[in-house]
Image 1: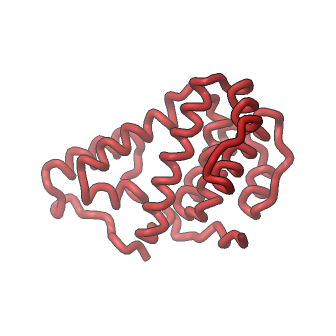
Image 2 (image 1 turned 30 degrees about the vertical axis):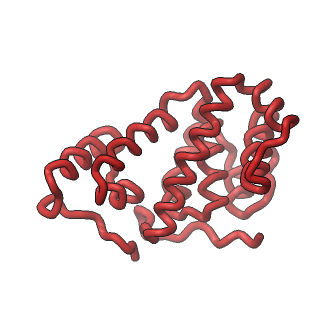
Length: 183
């Protein structure tokens, strides 16, 4: 059960209601992290706008963005984010076996560009830094702009994942699709 239940419309301030309406209009959902962030409407507004950029407007193709989101959600065991983005990843062209392997904590069979993403994210989380060879692989694959945007997507979805985990946000259907990873 979520630690902070969604605010009902009559509980919201004007700013909260305005931001909630914008989130609903642009995303169709105001649950998960958005329901938490609405406690700080300026944060919610800025975060959802940054999120809209990282999800819909980077130079990275949707398949790659969804892979970044899934790996990040998995590393954080972010139930809500996984529940929402596993279907998005399928629609973006990620293979069912790849999605299953990530969910189960295994390295999946990856296309070359997907392997760059996987290795980049795992190295960043494991070392809290980036080796020159891994950075150069990513830059060669996605360009400087792509690497900057890759880091932005990872950071935004880590922020979402932390929010979801701290506030124990429910998935849309109440499921818990991820088991904790053993480290």
